Length: 384
Image 1 (cartoon, rainbow, N blue to C red):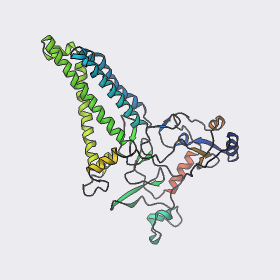
Image 2: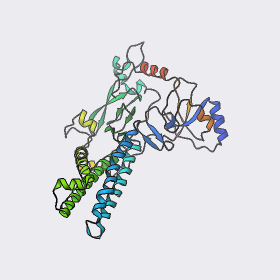
Image 3: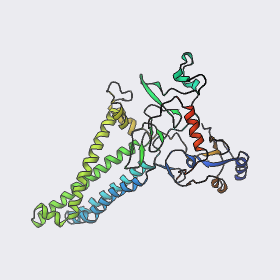
Image 4: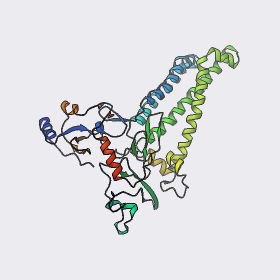
């Protein structure tokens, strides 16, 4: 689909002249990406389509911490010697900053999007020509269709991979197509509504650290709210209900963090199990591997090492790469280009939000969709 960007020392005028000669527009890949992602900082940050969920999650984390620091921590400052209450407040604030960073890394990182193909793979490359059948070639006069599945071997075990009609490729093992983001994601775990992003190969570690750290923060606030209630009971010689009336913030936070800790604690425990067995949420729900049949299970220690002790895999897509869009063709052709993008070139893309990267309208999209349906006439719809 793509060719590597050539080294170029041409000026902006040369680049503009080349685009005019080819009747195309020079843009960055994220600006014409067909998925539903939202891009910021020139394609450096890759968010899901439901980015508003991120602000809700931030509120649910930061507002209780603000209550804790404003009321509970201040009451504890004088309750301990050597102003120990300041340390309690500082730890909660630093922990909150750490969690917000993890949340942004989870939500703004490319989860492992697989590049789309510009056209379906050749049937000759995917079918066994020694045993031609109608499942592979269709009728003699009809269009060539691809088998909906094929077998690959992973650690000595045969694994079926599906053909994705949307991305026009055979998905790698553990890859699935997210119907919300409209992308194939490597090592797809699930689409998390709380972070507004798919959880996959490149951001799973951030997701696990975010969930477990938020659970620890919730338990931290829960514990010190009880400490504050106990201090009030001892100081005023009152019962627990009177103490709650004297510090309503402590009572509210105790109830809130109790519910949150149950939810996040269960989620953390579940993902610990998935880490130990090297499964994804999608695989656990869909396949229910037996221990001896899971081709990806490397043992507990190696499974943890694979997630936490290796570098983040490189992205398979450079969303900031320059591409050429030939608008004279019904099927857009893309290729990496060097050079800069001028304002006149950017103006050629209609109904397009440059910063967010969501196309409102694309010329010829209906014709393209009909061609894809014709090419994949004998293929079952790919699983969303």
